[in-house]
Length: 553
Image (cartoon, rainbow, N blue to C red; front, side):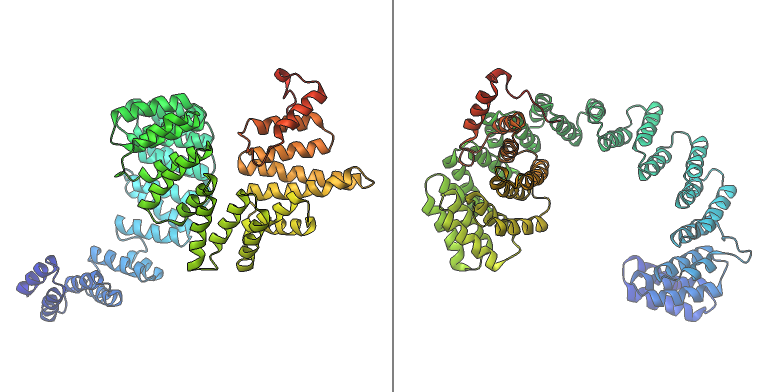
């Protein structure tokens, strides 16, 4: 028998399951009273996902030798896998009803906790703690049971008691912090991290957790201080540098972010994530030419190369350098086949004077699929840029024929009708449908506000002025929402100015017109903005240097 067991162990070690099983079965035939051999066969079966067979073999082993504690624990784990919770409990408890040892107690505690039997779990946890006062796991189990029962003060007291037994154990502080965070007590969480840092100054994990908790509380200045300390203590941690620069940039500290990233680029010239971030910060500072140079230094072999060239293209497009933008996009199209790049190339061809080339690129897509909704939509946009409104509406209508739920096409058609002052009722229906489909789209909200404005215009001067004013109030609600959703847009600001002008609130109107002027207005869409500002300044007798005195309350 000993020889068969040796063969079985060697075969199991070498992963020869069939040979190991045969050897242990021979040994079990020779000694049918051996619980150990039954457990060994059960282990082999479990390793090959034969759970039912493993359970049967382990039960036989348990019946033969109930004093084999390791065997009992193995059988309990098999019962867990087989979702037999009551059987787990029975095998883990001895004749006296208590867990057979500390490992059994811990496993039983976990089972009871998962079953929602928190009081029973707490009883087991306290028994473990009484039996082994120095066992940290028992104290943590007591705290978890209290927390599960909603008895949070007792849970924290249990953890504080554990700190007396196990001073400076970070795991206890971490558990306290998680508990406070789960309660939404971010201030308490921050307080706890500061308590840890008094005992262990400069502890990496605690400082990171403190910084993230401060960010969650929108304490960005404090988070920057925390991450600055981390950057000083761990200057080689690139993730910390990126996080700190991101915080500085997000809080408007553009120069600090740029300087930090320049230093990172110098120290880590092959980590082009810093180069890319520096380019983004320089764009935020309005130093586009520098940003283009920085983005251009990222090599083609780097994963961020495509994104960097796209940033260059966007910068050129925003500054009406359409030929340069198109060259960048064409380079990217040569590297990656992507419809969005094709659409952008078509638009840039049109904007750079090759309208027919842009149309041809999109029409080629329709040759392959006449029902290509995206290509139809882009053609509509292209003709809109070309000021061929009828042809633009033709393609947008085709989009809606193929997909009546296309929110962008619904908005485009509705807004175009509003701009023309025609089909206002139907335009409102289309835009309201678009709002239902895309309630978080600020430009659709702007369209709805604009249709209310256009409907109010003929009513204000007549007998239905009150009705018109109600429409203008509705317009303001939508346009303010549009400002929030877009993050600020010159057209939306001008629309707000127009609404207030119609309401005869000239100071408010001038404020929003001037606000629009500070946002790089789109001259093709806002040709009269400058004229409106100058006219109102003259009417209100406001010198240039004193304009914009009114601020919204």
